[in-house]
Length: 458
Ligand code: ARG
Image 1: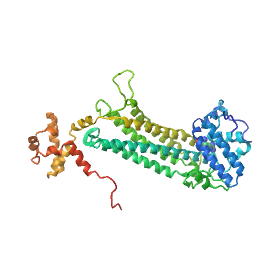
Image 2 (image 1 turned 90 degrees about the vertical axis):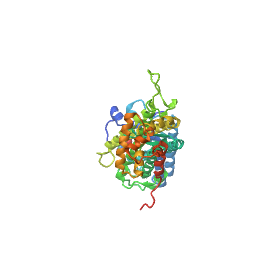
Image 3 (image 1 turned 90 degrees about the horizontal axis):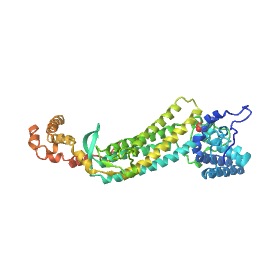
Image 4 (image 1 turned 60 degrees about the horizontal axis):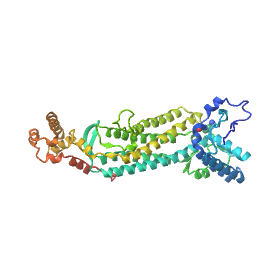
């Protein structure tokens, strides 16, 4: 069953001929905004209920519209009603006109009353907010799962020592647990950033009309409550032309993707033969068509690559909006593909990333071996001298010399003889080896690590 109603919503005495088919194709958003059918029908049902309750249409008319809309929803979901018809001039302008035309085809004259006291401008703004709030709930659930996975993995590795890096040079030893929990913090911020944005966008634009509101005695609160909004958009021009919420959400999603991308970059490095800190499960790796030895981290690379799409989606929305005068402009139809892409990409990337992380194998020994090289305990050696009374700058110089000597002699701080230490400072005694032992370096720092809130905050 196709909706082949080629009459346009605006068809009236105003036009003397129909639209050029190529223009119709160019103008139509149905090929992508069909995805809003569920939200659009929900919004129309809430609107029809409100029109009936406010006696703008009769209760019978309201019920007949609602039954018609429910029938359309059923037929779309079962695949009986499809969106795109064969000939392009037959294609509806968007999902809103498609459903309205279908309704009128099904229930007759009463269908024409649905659009009383509303415009597609407040309709699309309402649909989009509902769609995004639903998707954000799903993405926040995925972030919760990711945080749970991270804290479980981190618990297992509280004693796993690895090199901490700055400038990708071995810097100071850390636990793998602490490294993982750094990502936990990022995703925690993402989680709350998205809920914060979702709360801010819970304002209903329905009733703002085309731009200036409506002359009918509508009950905006009633339809807003029915649709799960917390507040009403206060200014009708802003209500129809605001897309800040889409930009805020896409910006929140960009941060999620940036964090995933950084994590993936580390995963890619860690499973290289140079590091071998981890090994990805076979199910989350790929092979090479020519080099039989290869096990490639394609999934992590793809997530890193796909982050660029979401950043570009954010850019699209900003550039699309920046020059628009109030209120609605058709440019805004271009928001859909960017929003859908940002949501889809972030969701799939999280869905791939979580099990990839859950199933990866950690080579704790390799991490520890890497941490014993590269003079990762040099700061602790300098701190040792400071605790014995030397100024930090002087201690830094003494240890710098010792490191230089070790490099020449191919030694590590752990196996440099005590007399070599003592040649450079008489503050050294044999407890230096305890002070620079990896486990102590990590434990001493973790002791000082403060968790939680600062008390006495003013
Ligand atoms: N398809 C349009 C969009 O997505 C719906 C609103 C159209 N409004 C209009 N006055 N042409 O933005």
